[in-house]
Figure: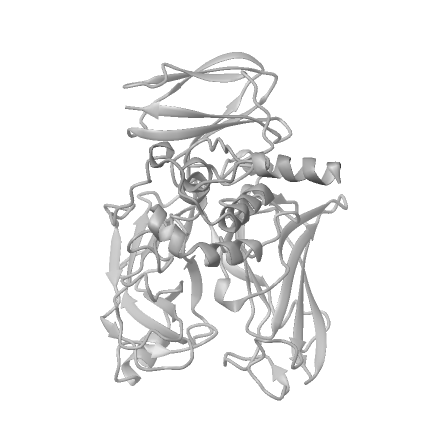
Length: 518
């Protein structure tokens, strides 16, 4: 009895987490990039009143790990620009809600991040906008394709791509293709409304995928020395996904492209190297009713290749997708694993560093399809035969790879090195449920800090890497560290708050600290 009373007294003395001291920092770090006024998250979490109103939804979505939306399995392969919460942060939100979601002292709350509607690619070489489209009444999701001439008169290389949704309340994701056959334009002309409807792709077999956009995604920039070839006279085709319930709303989404002035870039193709025809080892892709089947595809890389990103693609009956590579030296390289496939949350996933595959490496892909009544996404009730095709009730099995002719030195490029989505601030939780596991050292420091001009980074480390991230977790600067003492200039960054992360040669995080440029 005394032990029980002591435990109760200890519990009573444990402070509850508050919005101001604990939760706001997590939300500003991981949620408000979408959940701000006018953002893709459909409701705002920028202030306490917003968060309190959504507290139960926040608890449920984070407990189920459906928010932030990040389908890949981090344990299988840590990818670039991950949108993840640590278990400690998930527990923190739950404890806050369970305590009644107290605000705490408003004066302790961090300054909310500011979001603007300004575009990132401010001087695009190509900027096209789809016609204004008013969505009709529909009880199902709509996949609408819009065709826009690129005006590109010669082959050029895309080095930057930015999709700007015209209506963030209803644009769920966007696939961008190029088509030189004219078929997409003909399909558009045959439909009296702007664009035309197509579910799986754009309905043109020869159209080539060149990019994705999903909520929370930042503009995509190719690695240095690489570009996606945009063919002369190509039509740009955007397939826009609108969720059910979007009727009578207006959208006019824009696409901005940055092109290289050089014609000597390595062509970064985005191709379905693993697909449901030639590389399928146990086809055809057909799933009988009331059965669960797993399919495998395989492809031997004939030349040295560097892959920078991967994009799995399937339809509604699919439940999981996984891909890996095996080198001639029998090394297995994990690429991506989507343990709970969801057609509505597909994307292009970049690797933290480009992956080099020597000639003779073998790419593998696996996908499982559940064509039973127990699959809530099954479009047929009762289940029917599901075979390969473009329709909603058909299936696909594709793994797109962003790839180019490869060199082993490509793995030295830095795309993203953060061990965890970088915090808007170094969150100092007062609630004692645990912190990010990063150790703190004094191996790196900025001088001066705060600074009004050039900053010097001083390091003392055997070898490693230091990265700077902006408030939205985007890598803005990275530098490999040579052994010994180093003094490295950091300049040409705009004013603001940045987060520095230092990692050793093995990629183990050592230190995180703030840099303020005034």
